[in-house]
Image (cartoon, rainbow, N blue to C red; front, side, top):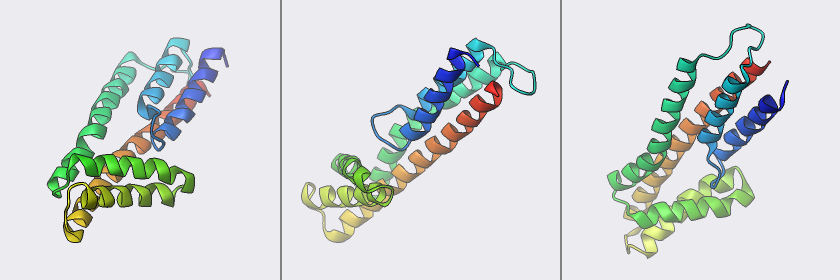
Length: 162
């Protein structure tokens, strides 16, 4: 195993973590790990190197899901009557909740969206709760999708290396 493969494994693992923690570009790190495996021409046990088509397909998936990561929470927020501040509150709540993982991140996101919608937008409790649930569902869907795909990319990285 060469230095490119070692870096690829590190990036793939950090990519999975980055799908959950804000500030780390999770899925793009996994795509870079696959690119490094491709450059290193690793063959794994099957003896077949990674194809360019496989690499391009995962690159396209990475771009699409990264775009969805920004669009999906916003659409869910609007769909449930929330505002931009609810999304920002969800992100802040999730960051604060990191210290109490994993439940803290989820509850922090929900509570942050609820409080921002309640205080900043002056919504009633029902309206704020509805918006917070929309933000929360959008966050869970986008984070879940990123994490699942990131784990799959990690597995492919390991398969092609070993």
